[in-house]
Image (cartoon, rainbow over all chains, first blue to last red; front, side, top):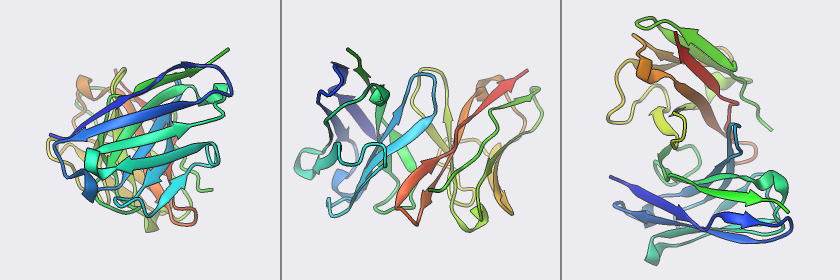
Amino acid sequence: EVQLVESGGGLVKPGGSLRLSCAASRFTFSSYSMNWVRQAPGKGLEWVSFISSSSSYKHYADSVKGRFTISRDNAKNSLFLQMNSLRVEDTAVYYCAKDRGDGYNHPFDSWGQGTLVTVSS
Amino acid sequence: SYVLTQPPSVSVAPGETARITCGGNNIGGKSVHWYQQKPGQAPVLVVYFDGDRPSGIPERFSGSYSMDTATLTISRVEAGDEADYFCQMWDISTDHRVFGGGTTLTVL
């Protein structure tokens, strides 16, 4: 069974930075595109960012473009999200989500348990 | 950007059929995926593309399209189906993924 384990969340002040990691196992990580999806407390799901299997393509939600950077290390089966210039409205649980294939139209077929990011002074 | 509209809540008695809608412009020409999320848990994919189900998802869960609406149908609803349900698709004009606002299914 696919395993995705996020880490790196925590409390940070507005304007600060944080780097999230997602350790993947039990599947061929380098063959699948990956995503970050977040959920603010009591709210719905919001897609944050996408990266293709070879890192050739990256996309960001308008709400984080220019502040967040997605990356991956296929040799280490790891996905990352560098978050800079954090805002109070970035407070959320951040999920690592695997695509069912490599491309844009695939569903998210596996999710991690999430890591909580709290932005507060 | 593309918008997916879901009703905030749907209520159904055990054993009945629940229908959760997801509205969007010309949604019939797109592929919609559905997720179930129970309190304190990560979302789980329940239906994808034109009604496919991942392994382990009961046949009671199915998907369909009609005009500008995609529908998740849950037949013979059980207490364990009580959860939030989200629709999701890919917006080809922006290459962004889009989620609906979510629907809370209450089993009476």
